[in-house]
Image 1 (cartoon, rainbow, N blue to C red):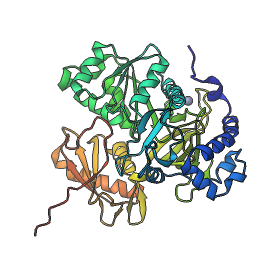
Image 2 (image 1 turned 30 degrees about the vertical axis):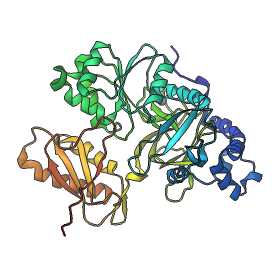
Image 3 (image 1 turned 180 degrees about the vertical axis):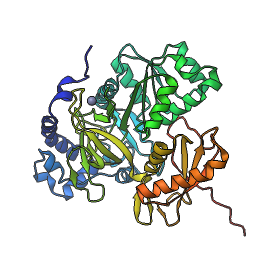
Image 4 (image 1 turned 120 degrees about the horizontal axis):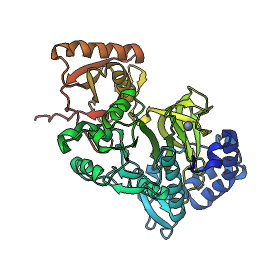
Length: 453
Ligand SMILES: [Zn+2]
């Protein structure tokens, strides 16, 4: 059986892959100038028309694209151009829209032509193939929203591999669980939160332990979390499986971008045939090399997308490079996601990702707490905290109530030591934090109090 979806590109030295990608750039830029009003305007102003962009160094001289800019380009669109000024194909050629699942601001939409659809299903299949999905798998697809990257596009990817798609997203948890043995499901795709939720509720909903359902593979993405040893252990022990892989993609760029191989040591970039990925310093915007331990923000250029192409798109995803070579033979760098720019909080001048707080808690205190917590903001737009950041953490069932105060203090102390950030920890009963079937947020906004008179 083949080990790779696209052996040539997946095993070619990474520098050679980048050199091949660079050759696609000048045609891509030309197409942008001709077809996207949005890019024509900004590139024309920069007089790059006269320059030839044929290397990744030259690419670095071009401006970034942010999600806010794309969002603004979709305000008051003319008739026939619902995707705004960056719609680079006519409605006759666009066959599908996708939306990014951001929780803040007006939703942003992207389009796919038939060609884009072909590109996406190939790249998404590549991602799932790397994650170990094969044509003899029966895959339960648990995303409930067809329009997000992880919805219909992922279904296409599974069918492209030839796996049997069982789309259970949207059904009740009970129906999902009872369908697994009935359809002899071998693999699950879920968000990490929902995977944990299924593990927790199997016994009380369908009367058996998850490991009795004979699942073999678990693939999760959509949010950081699976990189946490405790969460991985919980899923692994609950389902009695070792095949647990993390994946990542973005509707803004490509639904399937990154995936863990059998080494499970970070996600390989899988979309090299269609997308250029750069690592940049999120503060200065300067380029960073792909070396072990390097951290930065991922930036993407979709050199083979027709409907809504993006040039140097700032993903807001902050990652650490976990490797640049791998026993599996893939040459693409491997990463783990640390957090998102949108989620970043500032405590007295120190930047902190909510996921970093969660990681410390789950790594050091999992004996006493459940993998659920929430951080409270006073307002939607609050980023800065001058008082300790309020964090609610679920105590594990059976934890001695008399020890909760001491556990809360120990957690606050550990977070202060590792992140130089103060948190105010409240322990709450297991089950307090609402579970969702899509992504479980870490940050919540306090309900506003009614002002009288
Ligand atoms: Zn690998």
